[in-house]
Length: 471
Image 1 (cartoon, helix red, strand yellow):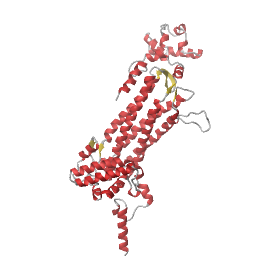
Image 2 (tube, helix red, strand yellow):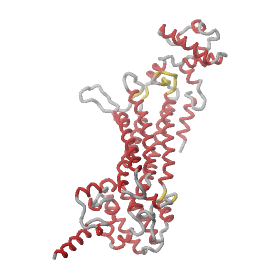
Image 3 (cartoon, one colour):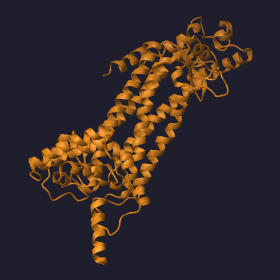
Image 4 (cartoon, one colour):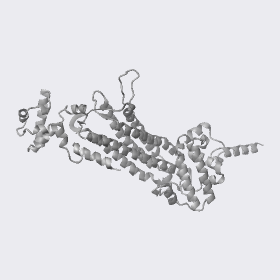
């Protein structure tokens, strides 16, 4: 009687629990189920999992591993599963661990044995690697589009303010006059490089792991190239061990995301400074700000502040993934379940952040008078005076020393270089003539720098238009 009871208990366990449960004599505890399950977060891969399964099934039918009738049943069943997921009618079960087994269970309920045949020639190891790549490929495409939108928003504002003068800084000290349009285009360049990195990253994401099975490939006569073509992959992963255990593509995406957020954070820092009443260069729309619970006058730039903070979050996901992989032997290990939450969050963060910044940049109000007033402080045209003297034949080092003496004199008088009289300027060097006053104006300074990469309004217009004309 005892033996029969044990057998019944084992049969019950095998029927109710995981796909691998027949190997074990007892079920895992509820705590272990919660600890090891990933379905709470990997269910977002559901539609990509189905996409991969349908391509796999089509290939199995082509090579004769399953029948055309099986394929038709699988397609019919998956159509129903998709409807249930999209209508939020699908029941996700913790006992089934992950997105793959949950979908497989429901498919078998709907179509019977044909659903059980679907997993022939593959493993959850190559299945999840494929799902992540399919999902990430779509996220990359979205991020690239958003980066391009942000660049166009910056270029549009730059074109409008191609001749708006502001101080350029080094060490947060006034250095030389620049145009606000030129300043904005610096960020357009950063985000352009970010888009290039994602385009390059996508090439390595877009390789098919499916067919590697658990780690060694499969004895079934599969056609991996057919599956790759059906799923839009450029190539297949060439080593089965690497195919199931590689997460380089996820690390690379997180690295690119960290750089995106670093650039966002730099822009955010400037936005926070610029909206401060002490500087007052710009205003941002109310919908991106909040007030204070105690100080009724406050308008806090919460969005750029929070974006600046979220940069650390994405950086953390990169370090977590690098640490996750550094000690893993080949091939797949359960550690890799930890790759998803950080990766998902990094993608969500850059998508939401870029979407908001496109709107926020488009709504910036520029206070040109405040920018110009600030550019008149700090002897911003001192380098122009030095360049003028060099063009008169003075060696640059001597010109530098001469202008430094002139600046010291201005500090004593409490005036700008342009406020000195011609005779006062000539006291520093006799070659200075009346034309110096055009050189010392803010407009003269920026207009003189019209080479590629320069701050001259005409150059800013060319560069901004180039971005806007890019498809």
